[in-house]
Image 1 (tube, rainbow, N blue to C red):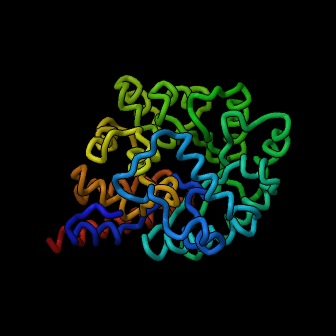
Image 2 (spheres, rainbow, N blue to C red):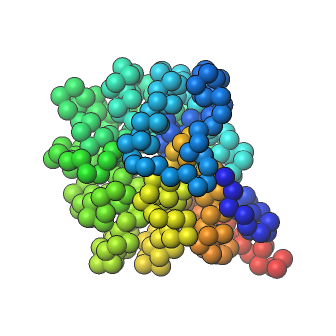
Image 3 (spheres, one colour):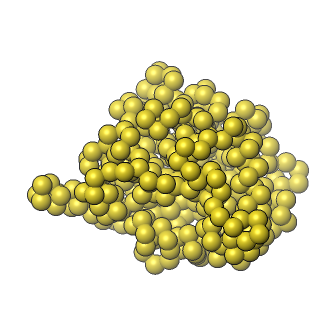
Length: 338
């Protein structure tokens, strides 16, 4: 998938130090690993990799993703192998320096896997030069009598850096969530929530108010409520946006109509990531080129996206400042050469 841009712009995107802050590990399985174990079922990448592909609904997307991921992710060792290939590729091919990735608690529950060992397997796959933070995604109905003990214990796992709320937004969320998210923050963990996809802006406001999150995965439908946007900007809420995902899932009508630029103009910090590239077929280069080719992002605006990921990264402040300085130096050099 490519969104054609001038070579000068493509070169800038390649050179920018970048982050992936909205990346599902199961949905990011490198396709060649899936092909290796099931060439009969997956001789070629799925048709959903086509730029003009659109899913009829979220359930169809979820079913296809779980079918592919379920073949591979059967042990912590498999998570480690996939993460190692993925993280190294992001570093070497896309100049990614910082990654926040989530694994699904449901995969632990239904696959009978050890969540603590899985978090360690993912975290220890980080290659030199890349900071990786691992979050566990918990479904709206994923905390119950059969899971709550080990989910509570997860807040103390040494290789788990945070939690995220996963699943269709229209499913109810019990009072357990606000308590768990508050306890996670008390432990110094990152807290996020998926919102602003299929249930409109109201759910974005709910996760900010009820769960106390300041990191919203997607969030794009908040554009429909200007008063909410103003309040979120005042709270310094960040949206971890995935443009290709938004279009292919029908959250946004077209690439040209994506609201990320308007969200930024409203004062919302936005990062850009690939979400589930196993299903959507996009790379981080593609996502940035989409911004330039379809939404008119110039050098400064592309750099602002890259900066945003480092601004919210859970890292040593000196390391963050070094990365931000790299971006500034890159822009200065391009301006002098122009």
